[in-house]
Amino acid sequence: MSTDKNRATAAAILPLVGGPDNIVSIAHCMTRLRISLRDRSLVQDEALRALPAVLGVVEDDTYQIVLGPGAVARVTPEFEALVEEGRSASPAPSPAPAPITADDLAAQGAALKEAQKARNATPFKLFLRRVANIFVPLIPALIGCGIIAGLNGLLTNLGWVPAVVPALAAIASGFMSLIAVFVGYNTAKEFGGTPILGGAVAAIIVFPGVAKIDAFGLELKPGQGGVLGALAAALLAVYVEKWCRRWVPEALDVLVTPTLTVLISGLVTIFGLMYLAGEASAAIGTFANWLLASGGAFAGLVLGGLFLPLVMLGLHQALIPIHTTLIEQDGYTVLLPILAMAGAGQVGAAIAVYYRLPRNGSLRTTIKSALPAGFLGIGEPLIYGVSLPLGRPFVTACIGGAAGGAFVGLFHQLGVAFGSTAIGPSGWALFPLLDGRSSAGLTLAIYAGGLLVGYLAGFLATYFFGFTRRMLADLNTDPDHTNPAQDTATAAGAPPQERVPA
Image 1 (spheres, rainbow, N blue to C red):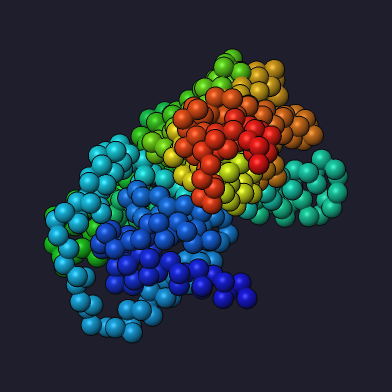
Image 2 (tube, rainbow, N blue to C red):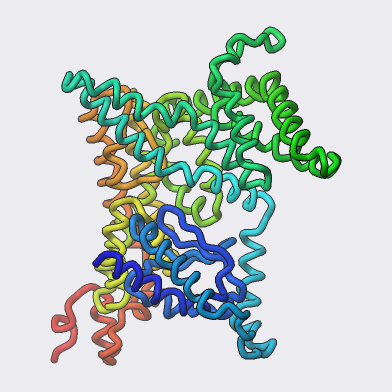
């Protein structure tokens, strides 16, 4: 039955994005179906947003349909199958769409595309997007291993099942001990090199034998440089490989190119990149811990308050390798629980919008459907469907995030440092991944307190400051009711029968 539901969702989406012949490529991340399109103007945005399974639509380097965690992983294969079936049913190239005028193009997409490119196609943002593409595929393994690590720690503290503990430790740590290899593989793949060569060069970093190498008197340790070193080594391998492809004769390419790629990149990695990346990784860990230990509430306020704008600008992607580096060093990232407070502020703001607009049935329905995902840390439906389009509630949501971040940051300054053993989840979904220096009960209590502060601050800031009088008059309307006096009375907060006599 669930398969039929997922296939029905895919079948409903496909014609609204222009059909099989309009699809260039298909992929998905944690929450979004990402498709590349031949003709953007064939997409029916409003009809897509109206589908019950669709939580939102985002246009970036690809067209992204927000389906939510779990659902997107099940709908994507069905969507891919329908696209293949549609293409095989009509192997001949489909006729070009009906001609449209230049005015139509301008009205439907050209201006939007140019504006989108101007905002999101800067070299820096494109680079950050590529960095995110390297690490996002690793998130499911990070989550699974992080939860197992937490379970292992719990069993160890309780003294239960001693025979199982070493097995859980091996399962939880195996991926992290080789994560550099996966980063190298994905880096080469993302930047146009041969993925296995990127993995081979990155594997040098975690090879135990590097401890026997005298790198100009500098001591090397297996794993030194971590994911940053792996990223740099694989990126170097891509450039070496591309250089070889240009200059090595075709008859010798299969032997010479991979050999030179691994040799040159490997030597540079051993005698330079590992040390430099190790110093950079250590500096990141030291700075993050110093920031929260000394900055405390203020640091938490800034981090929690600015995270939603960073998401809107796409700059949050720069934090992914930082989180991964902190997890490698300390076993958890201290930044993620604080940044998660931005989602709490978003939830509180959405609840306030729900109560401030009692007659806007459409928006209230959107909020009700998106709130469960919001509590679990999936913020896109509330951001793109509620707060961002409204404007002021997005700002007040940031205030809620800042308050929650300040709460958690204060306890860091007081010595209760903790973090998440994996990246990806947020909100309530982060509870199983929390770890720190203090007891599990205290860690969970502080994180829960931060969420409550974020919810409350986001709600209060939005309820009292999230709307102007004009916004309330315009938004708090019932399509089936046309009495402006009654609408205005309801906007002021009282039931219609109390303000306007029947």
